[in-house]
Image (tube, rainbow, N blue to C red; front, side):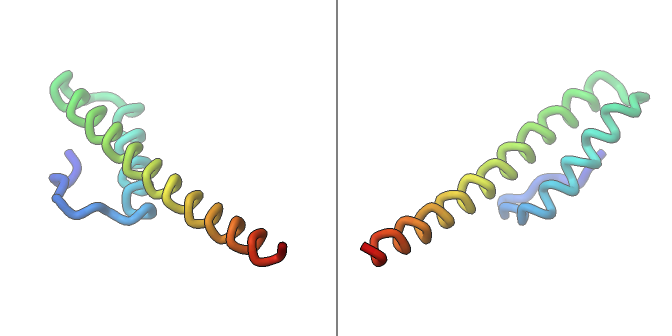
Length: 73
């Protein structure tokens, strides 16, 4: 099983790498139903973390673009 999640939010890269490992383990099979469910839940949490990072990056980029457009007017 993967390391226990902590209260600290992993970086995008850390979450992505762990998510890749979770998917690999699920695709490989050979785990119990309980372990598969735990992996699935961890994968969902990691996917949410990745999406939050991407959404934050998009918001930052949009703010910079908007600032650039406003100052050019």
